[in-house]
Amino acid sequence: MRAFNAQELEKACLDNGLLMPEHVCEQLVAAIDAQKHVIFTGPPGTGKTTLAYVAAEVARQSMMCTGFLPTTATSEWTTFETIGGLQPTGDGLIFRPGLFVDAIESGRWLVIDELNRSNFDRAFGQLFTVLSGSAVVLPFKRKGQPLPISIVPPGIEPPEKTDVIRVPANWRIIATMNVFDKNLLFDMSYALMRRFAFIEVGTPSEAAYEQLLQGPGNVVAKLLCLRRFSDLGPAVYIDAARYAARRAKDGPSESRLIYEVFYAYFLPQFEGMEDRRATTLYRTVAQFLDPPEQAEAQRTISDVLGVELAV
Image (cartoon, rainbow, N blue to C red; front, side, top):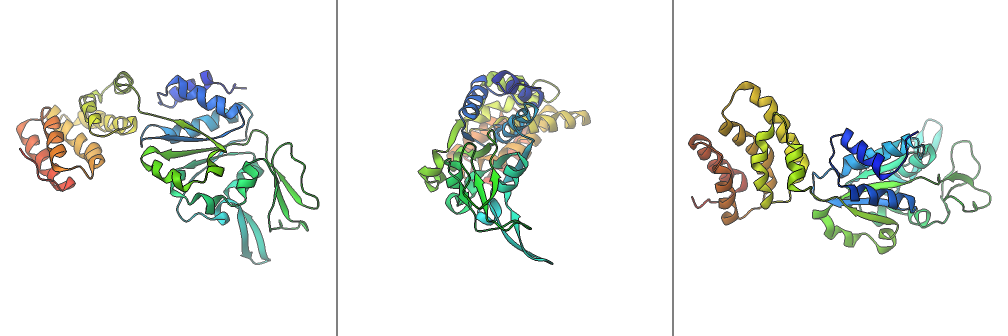
């Protein structure tokens, strides 16, 4: 049986191609041990979702859960999607468990990607009560059961005359939230926020990026300078390096390869950039390009970003 500790978590991250700072793994383990649910914050592409999956899998191997239920939040979420509700069938209306109830019943951790997309208060509903350590009685009955459902946290006395769904002691929610959407935290009530531990998953150091980009696609390392324009996470560089490694087999010039990688993976990241900064972006990329690719880069930056370059 695998132990759920920072060392095992860091090793599992490396096995999944994820270079995660040790302190992030230590924070996560401490939060889980402290009976907290967790929200990862940070820029897109820093590995938050992968880390959530890896953590849940290590928890499964540690016998803390039976697995995990992955989902992505949406603005349409209500308690019907999260808790459940009545659904018509040939036998009449029956209770269909939502994501949270399904995960609790099956002993799986719930991994929610892009939690910031949801309307928190509307989506969580009665779960506020459960997450705060109190039992809640739902206005539903399971098929064949005469009593209403109650969801009961560990160590809490269940309400009388209810059909009890007991929350496992080690059950957790791990969610992700983009730091660029942090203004949406104001939409998350304080009552909900204090039920979670927030852990920042930032971008790695320059040395860590260079370590990630070792190999056939390492030409992409030349574009690490683009991080000065936007807080680009490692995922975009890893994807670009995979493309570069494959494309290099066709024998293009280095200039051509760098331009293709820039256009396919990096240029879309700079939407909304103003003219002067876009001109600096062009000059930064152009130093790695031959004249034909420089002309293409000038045209595509202007067209894609809708800017006028002063070159």
